[in-house]
Length: 116
Image 1 (cartoon, rainbow, N blue to C red):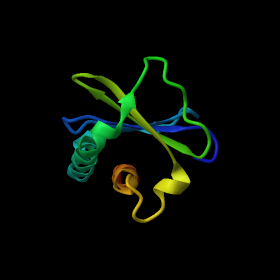
Image 2 (image 1 turned 90 degrees about the vertical axis):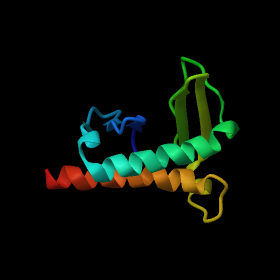
Image 3 (image 1 turned 120 degrees about the horizontal axis):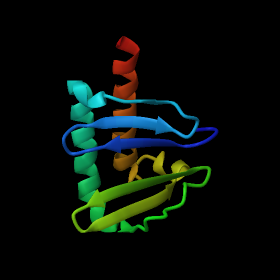
């Protein structure tokens, strides 16, 4: 986002929401099949990259401007990956599939919100 942050919450049961630091958001995405499908795909991509995530602290900082932070709550603890958004947009970047899958979740959330 140009100003502030956006947080996408994606859970294994399909629960999906988007929250912004400005106080807005989209909740209830898990009630829509297209959102659940995008969420499950995103989580599978996260799982495929999880071994590259570092250990996260409970007081994790907000990402700096131009950065994207992925956080995962796992059975073995909190994990994170912080990357340059510019780099993530490059085709062939090692984590571009992760970034694209996350954006697909947001796109599906917006789509179902526009229809409701």
